[in-house]
Length: 285
Image (cartoon, rainbow, N blue to C red; front, side):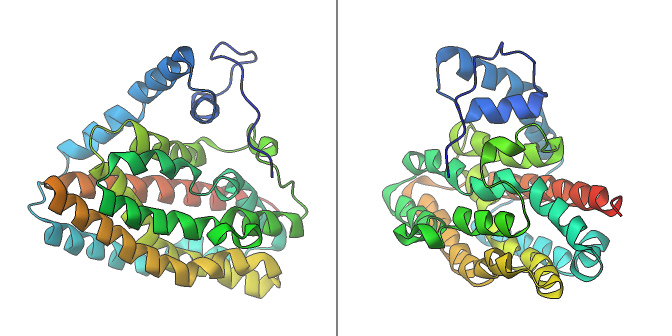
């Protein structure tokens, strides 16, 4: 699996959509010009979005209060959505393939955008995050790496397995979900935004991926192993993220409100991306 080819400078022609351009720049050589272009695009999108979320969020007093809020959000989401039920119970193979294609850039680059957060954490929190990352990369076994499992799923469905094939066709909603973690891990003013977002993601995936796992079982798609792998490993990842958050608190204090803003940010972006992908898939015959 190749890395994305280096994009030209921000002035490349033809111009990409802002979110596509941001994704390309996030994965490009961090020259001064590219970094400046990234910051301009983020200032128009995620920075004001996080500011709006923060203004609408009541202060969270403690880590325990944050955990209670997270559990409440997960409980709300556990009942699922109409889009999820449709994908699990009714989607055709072509419709399911459309959704898999929509999230290909996520699956093929999974967890790569987390690494810049490591040096921003105290050492014991770094260790907890690294245990998660080691799992994401198959503990060094390429056949167990999550991105390789997604490539296997794509191949079974007759889709390309290189990220370059999906740059132009990925929807803005999905790009926003992808691009958020580049900001969270590198440029968010506090690391709590990243930790809250990732803690939410790891906690929500076991429930969310049951939808795709059920669809794969119904449609007899062997590559559903990508989803079933997450059903058990992300429970462990959830525990590790809580360890990381506790270690940040021990090392120098914790802003629990920012944890909660990060969780709400990811919840909204992921929901938008999934709902939009299923809505488009339902228009296929």
